[in-house]
Length: 281
Length: 172
Image (cartoon, rainbow over all chains, first blue to last red; front, side, top):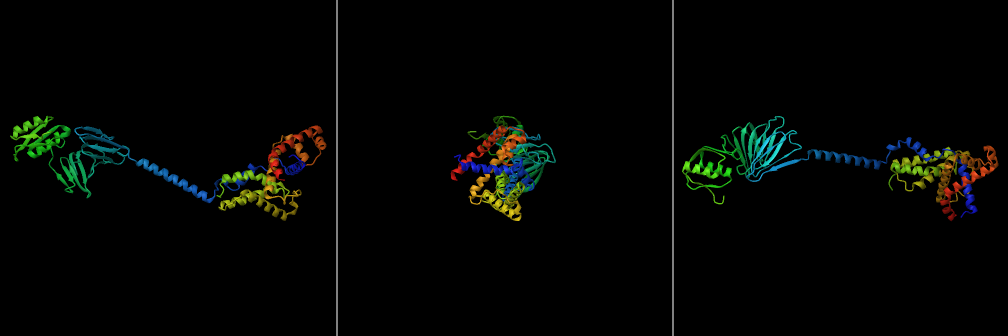
């Protein structure tokens, strides 16, 4: 390979390069710096690429923003439920107390509870003793109705296709149905809304026993026998029938944590009727 | 083929700059003029690229551009014409010319890397055309030392180009 042609040619090249050689010249890095500085190179990107990069950045920001907003507003649910016959007391973060009756359910969003509203969703029966806070109204949301209060105690019950509210103290705003019918209830009042009636019925007289499940106390003042049976059914979770019909009979009595058979014995003797729990109960 | 990013452009610039300058030196005499011409050719490509014009074979395009600019340069000032245009320069293929220039760039780099004393002797000999005796006198060295240093310098230069050289002379 190393013939004369090669040597001649190499010699020519070496002479050529040596002739022009200058220490420190033809430095590609230096030449590039020179070239780039005159052109603000770092900021010049071909238009298409620039647009794509800008679009990518915008999309990324939108993505981050969306995620942030979503993450912030994403509810963090706490749910509490009871089985039949069970009772539970639940303190919410603002020390509002919820007494949950059997076979009931509530939930609230820990992250947003008390931010600007206090919202609890529920089914079944629950008694609320709401800590007063006028800047952060308290809402109970049931399937058919919404109850809004500032600070008070009241009970909400949601039997099939209806809602009942009993106010113990304070003032309650009760909104129900698609029609958003609204009533204001004060202490001692109760109201119910049902799908069939499509309207709110307000009762000004207090139902003495709506809190019996919680207090263990059953009180009757001149109560018609049908109302007595209904309250006993609710409280003891039984089905009572009256074997001796006596429609005018009225009862005045109170029972504190007494077993059903003793209660029935007292009533039967007092009114001379015969109330018996249905077989199988 | 997509337009070049700044990084791609920089990479091309750095790898093509030296061979292109040596290519321009085949037409024009002064190193500064050659560098100017190459910078202008790159600037032209840069502007085209910024406008979104696509250049398929950048290397071939740049060699062509540098040739055209060099020819137009010497037509404006004939005194600037190189005196040592290789006689076969216009006869050889474009690819061969590119390879020649790349080989020259390697030689330039090899000279750059020579130890200072050896480089001085080498340049006195090959650039300034001094005889070994004259170099020895100039630098207060023995002729033997000059011969020795020249031998080592030429060996280093040969070694840097020998790989591609073998390949090219297989064709020649």
